[in-house]
Length: 64
Image (tube, rainbow, N blue to C red; front, side, top):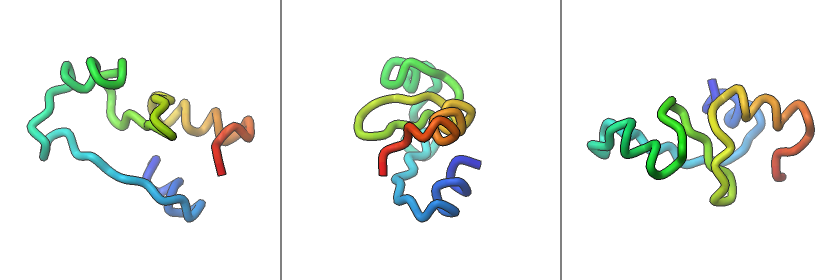
């Protein structure tokens, strides 16, 4: 759903598939602080998952 949102908003993004990278959720947690996917990072700041993304979008807090 996050990718769909970014596509609809014509926002570019880079998808990193942790399974293809051989990364465990525990390793993901060390990098982002969260174990769920997706973990969304904007301008090197971890914002969390899809719900966090939508909250930021609703509040007008997403960067251009």
